[in-house]
Image (cartoon, rainbow, N blue to C red; front, side):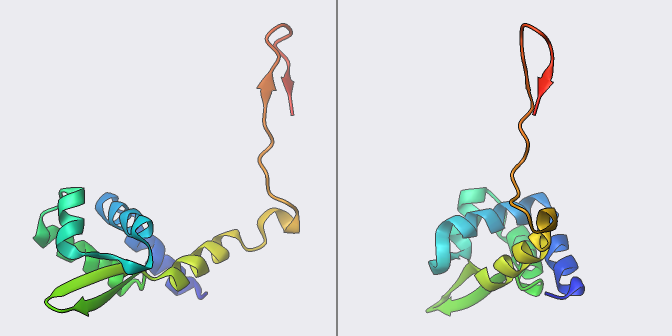
Length: 113
């Protein structure tokens, strides 16, 4: 994935309403949701939602399809997976990535990894 595409996708997601829309659409799966249902579930005015969906579509994070008179929006899973792959590429120098857990022993106040 090209850096320019990654920046566009991250910029589109870096806003509270757009992130909420994207997460709702991820939950909906490939079938997606009609715009009206997104607006109702997230309590976003249709005019604002239209702006946010345009931004997500422009960044190729969301796909718009027509079903009769309705517009259905779904996540572009190819772009989403590409973004996740880009962000985690070369993670931990090729080693298994798992966070070290730090716990404190209550009796000695020492930290163990």
